Amino acid sequence: MRKILIITMTMILVLSACNAVNTEGQQNASPVQGDVTTRYEDDAALFAELYPVSQENPFIFASYEEVTDLLEIGTGILVFGFPDCPRCQNAFPVLEQAFYEKNLQERAGYRGKILYYDIFDDRAEGNERYQTLVSRLEEYLQTDDDGNPRIFVPDVFFLASGDIVGNHMDTVSSQENPGDRLTEQQAAELLDIYKDLITEMENRCC
Image (tube, rainbow, N blue to C red; front, side):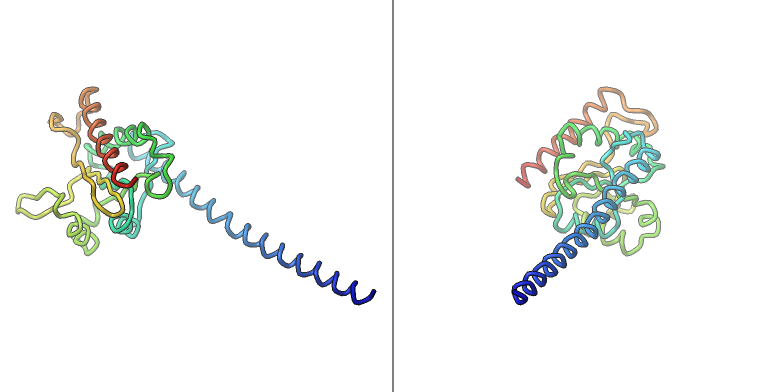
């Protein structure tokens, strides 16, 4: 009888230890997910202060490592810009509209967000990060007055499994003054361009 009691108590202790381990694992996992969610919310709020987009916009401030990761193996939208660029101020609200009209918010990973990279400092310095990006994107870039490939902004790239499906630089050709707000017709033209590229991206990755 005593032997049975000892075995029973041992089993209870083992089960209790297992439950404690599982609980600890759940507690450790929860803050990580919470941090990611908080980051997205914080990024959206900050982006809405810099550009005329909604508070629920899908833009996240990407690190250089995230940019290169997307360019190597990822699927999603990558945007180069900076706040003082007037054409970026015009383009990004239209890109946000295209994103939601194509229901990309339902996608997982990079496909469910728009990665934004402020290229201003890297481009001004011509540093190693900038040179690496130019080398990767060279065939899609326009050239400067000296004939060198350059990342002009806004430039939006659409990728499927690390392959560049297409990109669109600037807004629309009929916008002569970059500081002017897009007309309804111009915004509709740009929206169609973005939506067509999103469709092509989606077709390539499905």
